[in-house]
Image (cartoon, rainbow, N blue to C red; front, side):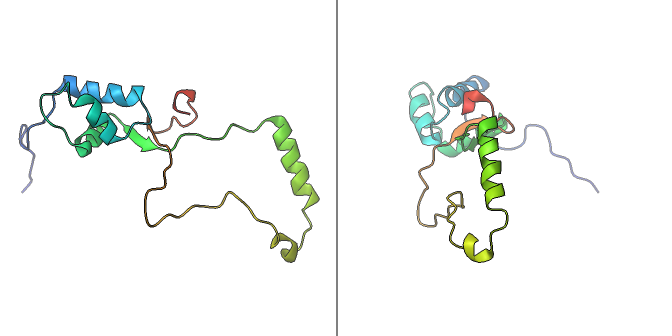
Length: 133
């Protein structure tokens, strides 16, 4: 026995294809806008109220996700040379000497509230695209 999904079953969409394009266009123009901000912008032009979850779902259908923007520039040859010199100078350090070094690129963990990081709406795999940086 096999089951198939009948076409047309399920809840009807709240928004039309034109309104969906309007939502995606707003997210592409203002890439750092939250779903609630996009909802506030498009609410006057839409005839029906749309939740921020619906907006997030429509953006996901267009393969747009909320991701962190690229915040660092690619290394220049001078930076690479200086890093290599730094590593070679410390290549024979003992564990006691390394315990005195503090690295600032460690992970951040925030359990109580939002991390206040800027996020952008962009497709996956386009992190180095300067439009989304």
